Amino acid sequence: MNHSGLFFAEFLGTMVLILLGDGVVANVLLNKSKGQNGGWIVITAGWGFAVMVAVYLTGFISGGHVNPAVTISFAVAGLIDVSLLPTYIIAQLLGGFCGGVLVYLAYMDHFKETNDEVAILSIFSTVPQIRCLVKNMITEIIGTAVLLIGVLGVTNENNHIGSLGALIIGLLVFSIGLSLGGPTGYAINPARDLGPRLAHYFLPIPNKGGSDFKYGLIVPIIGPIIGGIIGTFIYLLLIKISL
Image: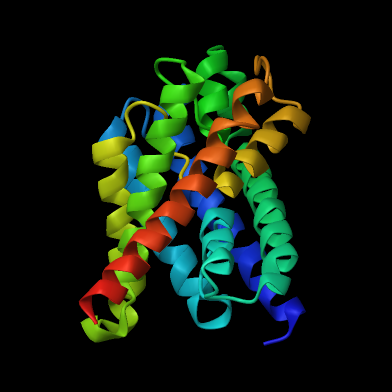
């Protein structure tokens, strides 16, 4: 596969991921939306389905990373060529940005009806419930480690799951959100946070407030990368020990 094909696959996959993932948050949090006050289970289910669709779209082309933490972890572990990092990561960040723009376009009138700055930011990026960068980072590390352990376990050829892989990965993300999403809103994906956060910054959203890059450039970027690398090596160690 040439780099342009990989780039477009990761761009499209991440854009769809954010459109559906941030879209469900918008549906739950914005005033006068059909899904207003739908709750955390609706949000986590929506994100799980969003991941499933994105992986089905891109899996056979690019591996369905749609997440720089996955791409970087695989590169560090030697599972993909390091030279692919710029292609994947730039595509993922641009896809995340465009997905955020599409969510804004879909819910423009509802943003006008909403005055809660935190709710508006929460649509585009993660916002911790109790702000403590160190503890928030630990949460993201744990969540992303579980994500990579789960992804590698699910896709292990010995499981013989074939095309069901994307569905199970979506359920994995649903599970992580239900169990570990409470403290930080579970970014577990730098592109899922930084791309839409940039969209929040640039878009003319009424009553939006600040984009909180003091948090966004640290916890949802560094935490998932560290956690992804840890999770990848834990799973590879398990395989090595078991052989």
